[in-house]
Image (cartoon, rainbow, N blue to C red; front, side, top):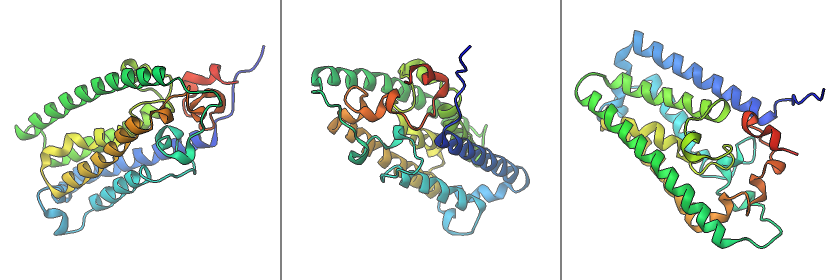
Length: 247
């Protein structure tokens, strides 16, 4: 019997290490909340500039992650995130069917905004809990940190948004770089420098992504961008979905 087991790609190993790192960040943040809840005060108002907390390091980590989404980085960053850049675009040899391309973008955008509607509803729910005093500032930051971990779980293990998007893998995902906006949108209710700086930067990353979808749609479709095809895949992040499709 033929052995279909394939060695894990270097990119997938690196992403699992990143997932481990994010779990460690979550654990540290949770312990900080349990033993020193006052450290989360920097996420209130303008307290960000009044004293140092470990949350400053978390803020810087998140900011650096978003910066990497705005520059072309070829070193073990998924093509799913980097497909906005011309340097990573591999056009097909044949003529692009622009009519089908437009329909593809139209369909994927429609499903993408279904996800956005669901996430906005979740944000409203979390905001109500916060404003009602059911959860405090620390829990709000912990919620964003949990989403930070869930982001890579979606990439490496299982993604619930595929049930709506119907994309075969992260490489072709229409909303790949929506991750930080989805992470930080729920903490907008904190109405502080900490929350607004993260949300605004995440919104900038989202705007760049959405503009590129409209201006360069050919970069987001595997039938116009060879780099997104399973046969050209070097990331191999989505083993559980696409292994049988690779040649």
